Length: 513
Image (cartoon, rainbow, N blue to C red; front, side):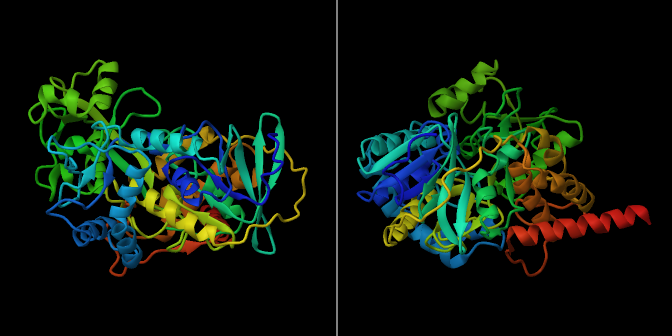
């Protein structure tokens, strides 16, 4: 295992996407250990984000309008106060990114060149090189971190467990090819990304199965609204894995959805192609489930201009023999973003002292039941800075912890993909959720490669079983209507396992009757 001499007692940040990088920079000059299982910024969803970062900075826009759009998309489950706080820091967040060297696209006159995305009432999306926003921000922050003397980067190191004593964090169990070791620290910031990699079709790096969520659950932290997975409606429908995303910004520029007969099937839906993502994803899913095919048609609104407006997407399409200027683009829904996560407060604090969570692995209350497009990168910047400032106020210490931990089996969700994709996908029902809980719960107890992914998936299934309504990214065909008084749900691992075991026992009794 990588030598940890001199690093004990420092703030540990797990994950090197935009949230983790921003937290590390904000903590300077306080010493920080940044831990990532790959290279800096690699295998993070941040770097793959095409759409952009939402910023209500235009002359016809303001925070109140942005908040109204966010709350509408969140479908009754946003924390209004926290959402307002995060969005109110937009100007400062963008200025901070520019301070670190991020260069957003601008008009010939020098103003921000705002784009439009679904469910936004204004053009407020900032981009870099058209469709390279996530990669542009990530690479710039990686360079800033590499030049920051207060940050020690442990790359190729897998964080597997959070060590807890007397109810608080005391260390992190780390592994690499040479073995395992404990980094002794009482201050840990999780920035480990989402869990869409649990599904067989995902826009996320394959390793994004919710490792941070599993660590937090085992450590005793509460999680919130785990049932809400956002399925992006327009992934490039090819054999590529992970599937490539066709950004919502393409629809923002006027592209329409058509079926195999050329029918524009979203035309009568409020908002049409720019309706909230859950609405569009279900409509696309329905066409495909009925045996049809779906295409994104950008020929008329963009044509030859597609190549310059969306160069990365154009290259992806061309690699599969598709020319968006003359060909409709085949698309399908795909697991994309997890709105649930570790339950945190306005500073990113979890329910376990010494543990913060930021970015997609956290549930702040900004996204509610359905994330508004491009709010995620903004949240990553704002909450990365907030958590860092809060952690900086805490006294660091080096607790005594056992120094010879076991080597845990490398996590692998592949054996779980079929059941998760079938029963926890775009459309759910009670029978499928019961089947998923019954199948997943034994895996959690094994400790083998599927145990941690199964724990995260089981949590999604339990939360989904308890929400007997349809709302946002959670749709149940057996409960298709929304409940009159929506509320967020929060549970710990003990409660999740208790519900799963009770549901499984009830199901077994029904089968025996």
